[in-house]
Image (cartoon, rainbow, N blue to C red; front, side):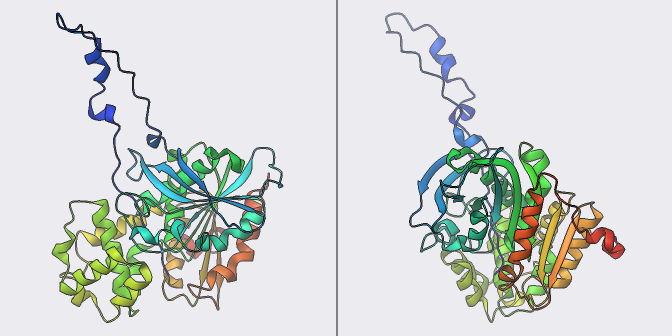
Length: 405
């Protein structure tokens, strides 16, 4: 299943709202006959305004042998300004594993589509850590792994699903939170890895990293079956019986990100029925309930071709097609959610931006099996990127000149 979500509004500090004048009033002399009021201490800067600040932590038990786990909340800036709490999980090797000089390497993971309702957040999965199983081999290899829920999923606010920039900031700030959780021994070297919606998230993080998180050393980006070309993938998904479910989620994400969009205007009674499902159930139920619906039965206009949605979908694609750290793209040829020709186009655009891309296709893998099929390749590639002198990446952009068109 595809993945996505995102946060939306930031919240200001009280001192920002008051114009910072709380102390000024206490400096004035009291009126005659009135007792002097005690001076109020200046309010400290709220930690949630610092990206990656650790706001809470809770040890997760039981955890697999050799793995320590925490459920955390940390600060992120979905809009680029103003902090909001984001939930997630941080994993680290056991205490018996020595911390290398410079700290443990970090893999920051972006998950696939789970939905927009808070109970769908991976950190709330039951049993605990069920959503983190695919990352255990990385922890056992000695890395710290972070798994963000994305802003607005599992925390106050709404999830701007499939909106790239808030997802990317949540991924980067999760790596910062791992460093703030000193028990992990996390250092500044980071590889970003995402699956499906999470592929969109880590490509956004790669594009944002130099400006948004310059203290992190992004050694590479891994995008598995990435939802990178949002308009193209949403169009091809309409060949599926449940394609309208994905399209509705994408419309919700844009409406969360831009409050000027009145989503109800674009929904028929069938569309409003599906919207209720989306707001109260997780993604698998949304997709199941959308079977039998179409663009024409669910929406008053075609969101793939009409404003405000068509331009908004294209913007999510364009924002992640930037030059970034060396990137590994993993794609199954039998994937009917993120189709191989669409990913071919994504690789071509990344090449055109100057990104070094290692593109690996798996003829027998589909959207679900790609994770297991590609895991050994992913593990080897990540280990190479973390070497003191990483070997040259096999660059399809240099090998295939057509990729640059």
